[in-house]
Amino acid sequence: MLEADFVIIGAGSAGSAMAYRLSEDGKYSVIVIEFGGSDVGPLIQMPSALSIPLNMSLYDWGFASEPEPHLGGRVLATPRGKVIGGSSSINGMVYVRGHARDFDHWAEQGAASWGFADVLPYFKRMEDANGGENGWRGHGGPLTVQRGSRTNPLYGAFVEAGRQAGFELTDDYNGAKQEGFGPMEQTIRGGRRWSAASAYLRPALRRKNVSVVKGFARRVIIENQRATGVEIEVRRRIQVIKARREVIVAASSINSPKILMLSGIGPAEHLREYGIPVIADRPGVGRNLQDHMELYIQQESTQPITLNSVLNPFSKALIGAQWLFFKSGLGATNHFEAAAFVRSRAGVDYPDIQYHFIPAAVRYDGKAAAKAHGFQAHVGPMRSKSRGSVMLRSPDPRSKPVIRFNYMSHPEDWIEFRHCIRLTREIFGQSAFDPYRGKEISPGSHVQSDDDLDAFIRDHAESAYHPCGTCKMGRKDDPMSVVDPECRVIGVDGLRIADSSIFPRVTNGNLNAPSIMTGEKAADHVLGRTPLAPSNQEPWINPRWQVSDR
Ligand SMILES: Cc1cc2nc3c(=O)[nH]c(=O)nc-3n(C[C@H](O)[C@H](O)[C@H](O)COP(=O)(O)OP(=O)(O)OC[C@H]3O[C@@H](n4cnc5c(N)ncnc54)[C@H](O)[C@@H]3O)c2cc1C
Image (cartoon, rainbow, N blue to C red; front, side, top):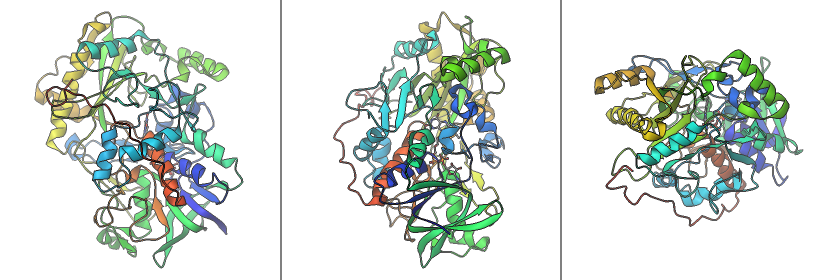
């Protein structure tokens, strides 16, 4: 029987960071259970291929939402990485810590010791930042972060247009000042995707006390309210991996609540419905599902300088060859090289809208590229009040869970999204874009009234692939909390969760960085270490926030 001190389910963003830290001093053995396979090969390693693996059953769990009632019954893809490195191996490689106030809000909601002052030292510990604000960034950590070369003039036009519209500029949204227009950061190193597998798991596997077992985790084994191991399926055979100290679930916001419910931890009624013996009645398991949605606002370019000219097979082959031999050129970037974080209105104290800008008119999934030259902004509100759930479809561990996001179910979602579209038009309308601006491709200049904008949003809003919150961290006496602030599952000993499922609320940006930070910090809790000393650095808050949106 396989056995280790710590058994981690999932070699994703958080699980890989945990494996690295828990094994660091050589005292404890660690087994990581991972269902996905190798991340070797250009489809994952070449940054510009980012739209390919997320569509492949080899690398993606293939989840989808139920028909979404507020989006005309559309079913939205919910990709989650099924590969070494988890979602960090199929993601867009954008690097955003989140806003300081996000973490302060976590602490206010009951995640004591997860305020910005507490988490900033962990962000620094994990980083090896190239560029960024002095004193705010980490250097020498496992996770390399870089900025793109921004050689295409459209990146500069986007940032300048933000300035012309009266918004702030920021040279480092991961430093003191998130608010503003500026360069975007990427988890890319030496021209390759720098996933959690590259940064953490592979270095950890060089140690004798860490191993990965390829298998499908079915449930956590719990005896006398204590987790003692994990039941896995390997080539149709059921096996048990024993945990001498603890089991840590790091299987993502979709799979972690599912595994918990299959193990008898969740809403009692729901478990009984499927004949699962109830070990801990935790109604919060699977609830509090949140995500970011975004729209692509596309504009034709009058100059033939966009990436649309290299979307043909011949150019792609050349780009691929240059990347294969030299790890350079257009293959070595994710093309997200300019960004903005802005506030939607006066009275909002920190940004609640995020922009990604790319010098191409193309869908995220690589499909349906516009025929003309174009550029586009991905824009969406960051703090939707809509909430959904992840529930069991059947007691069979192999069946996919029932995912209901309830996207756009809060009336404010519509107001916020309409504002996002109008604001993007204002930015693209600035003189910085005069040399490039052609006609609006999408939504199209005929889409102006609230009703027309709503119809466009209903048909075209997409997930930004940031589901989280389904095993919320909070106070022990909050019935909706699933884990306490040390990531311990409430009501069961020897069991923790550490991944994006424990976020009390979605952060202001993409979720790889906070997921890795969660793994880093949780590891210190598991080891009983004194947490890193809190920081006294204060974030920049716009002095005009009460009277202006800019
Ligand atoms: C297409 C896409 C694009 C994204 N773009 C960005 C971006 O540009 N920047 C950014 O910051 N974030 C991005 N994200 C989000 C970010 O990558 C994730 O939020 C983050 O990686 C989640 O980390 P996690 O540790 O919670 O889970 P994951 O990284 O998903 O790890 C979970 C792991 O557990 C394994 N697992 C699950 N169930 C089982 C089981 N039963 N048995 C064995 N193994 C199991 C999975 O295979 C996986 O390896 C993107 C996500 C996607 C899907």
